[in-house]
Length: 321
Image (cartoon, rainbow, N blue to C red):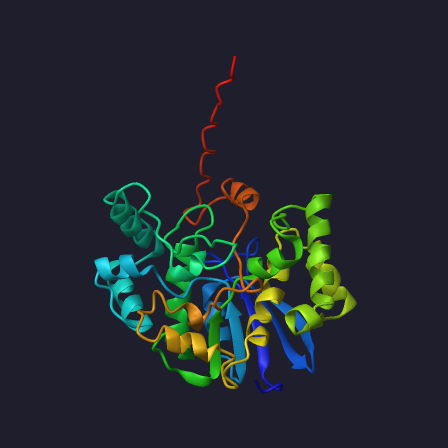
């Protein structure tokens, strides 16, 4: 990888606003240091589209799924390339809420346990990722709908997904939660400013700063930026910085940072399963997706339709006599 290349980590949301922006950390390599120069917040999808068209060279780790489960793609004859799948989805679903309804209708016709499918890569590590068909709570299915099409429209290269674009602008799928898991296991660090979660954010930042031997890089940033990573109760700024390390950790292709051996091993798979365009093979340091506790927190947040879901009904255990 060219050390002059700009690195970016993108913590994405399908419905950005001032309260919940798209968060982008940008930085560069300086020897073994991953220097994060700044964190920007984009409050509209139009602003995100503009950022994607910013001149390269840059290499970005994007925190949303780049593909869909193979069985779902094949059952609906969506296509065999990322562009074909996105075009099919857009042709059948004009909005993300229509996409949610499409997934719901398909899932309701499936047997129990086969409604929210996973890709192989979603279950390839101890940190199982949320299904790309999940459109509530942590709505990564809606992130797919709003995210991947914009990457393709902007002419960005998606290695391994049969979509060649501008070789100086390359996008990979990133999962900061797996990096966090390597440092604080399953302890939660997001969606609260309580002391225990703030302590976990501090532990993650400190672990990244001391990560040369363990991860191959050491995070470096200004004191003010470091303080903001710990202070941000949402964890989005920290996730963006972690996502920016995704290209740094994978060193197979000098132009893309993508693991070419894994791409070759899955070259015959459809884009829904070739996760190497964004995801690394099983590794303790690749990944985002919330713990059970964080998902419970998300269930009480408004979803993209503006509705706060009802809390799930409590399950009562029968006491033994």
